[in-house]
Image 1 (tube, rainbow, N blue to C red):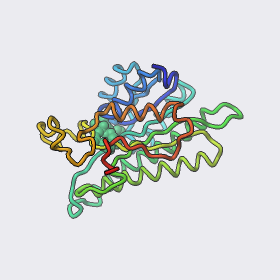
Image 2 (cartoon, rainbow, N blue to C red; image 1 turned 60 degrees about the vertical axis):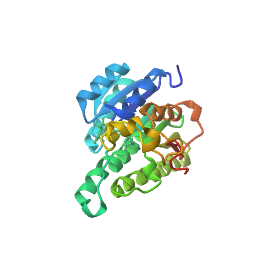
Image 3 (cartoon, rainbow, N blue to C red; image 1 turned 90 degrees about the vertical axis):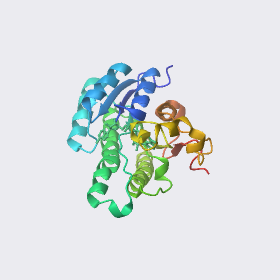
Image 4 (tube, rainbow, N blue to C red; image 1 turned 135 degrees about the vertical axis):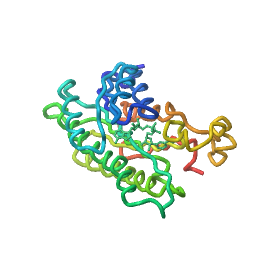
Length: 255
Ligand SMILES: NC(=O)c1ccc[n+]([C@@H]2O[C@H](COP(=O)([O-])OP(=O)(O)OC[C@H]3O[C@@H](n4cnc5c(N)ncnc54)[C@H](O)[C@@H]3O)[C@@H](O)[C@H]2O)c1
C-alpha cells in the first residue's frame, strides 16, 4: 500500500489509458500525483479520482513544461517521479506518410519525452538537498514497437525507438555525474485503450486467442498491467535499476 509513499509524481497524458492507470496505481501506493494532459478537463476528472492535482500540459510545448514544473515545485518543493507517458499513434503506409505527419507525431512522442527528461532532470536537481546527489525516477513509456518494426507504422516505430535510446543516454549521463536519477523505459505490447480500441473490431477484443495468436500469452495487456511496471520503476524496489527497458507485452518481443 505504501510502495511510493510520499513521493511527488508527475504523469503526462494521464487523462486516459495507461497514464490514468499509472496515476491511480501510484496514488494507491501512497504517492501525491500530478495528473497532466493536453486535455485539461479530462485531467481534472482523473485527478479527482486519484485524489491528486491536475495540470494542463501539452508535452510538445516547452513553455507548458516550464509552467507545470514551476507550479509543482512551488507547491511541493520537489519532484521525485516523472512518467513520460503522453503519446500518439499513426497507422499509415510509408508512401502516404508525409513529412508533416512524421513531424507532428515526433513532436509529441519524441520532443515531448526529450523535454520531459530535460525539465524532469532539472527539477530533480533543484529538489536535491544541499550537499547531496540529486535523486528521482523517470519512466518513459516507449512500446514494443520501439524494438521491432510494423508495417504501416514506420513513423510511430521510429519515435518509439528514439525514446528507447534517449532513455539509456539520459540514464548514463545522470549516473556518470554521480546522481541517483534513474531513467528507464517501459515497452507495452497491445494494450486495450482509446488508442487501440478502434484498430480492432469489438469481437476481436473478446476472442483474444484468435486475434492475438502471435502473442505467446495469447492475449492483450490491460492499462493496469503496464501501470504495475511503472510503480515498480518509480519505487525504491528498483533503486539500482537504470538505463534498462522493461517489456510488458505478454511475450510478444521474445517470440
Ligand atoms: N495502447 C497500446 O497498445 C500501447 C502500446 C505501446 C505503447 N503505448 C504507449 O503508451 C502511451 C499511452 O498510450 P495509451 O494507449 O494510454 O493511449 P490513450 O490515447 O488512451 O492516452 C494517451 C493520452 O495522451 C494524451 N496526449 C496526446 N497528445 C498529448 C500531448 N501533446 N500532450 C499531453 N498529452 C497528450 C491524450 O489526451 C490521452 O489522454 C503512449 O505513449 C503510447 O504510445 C500504447
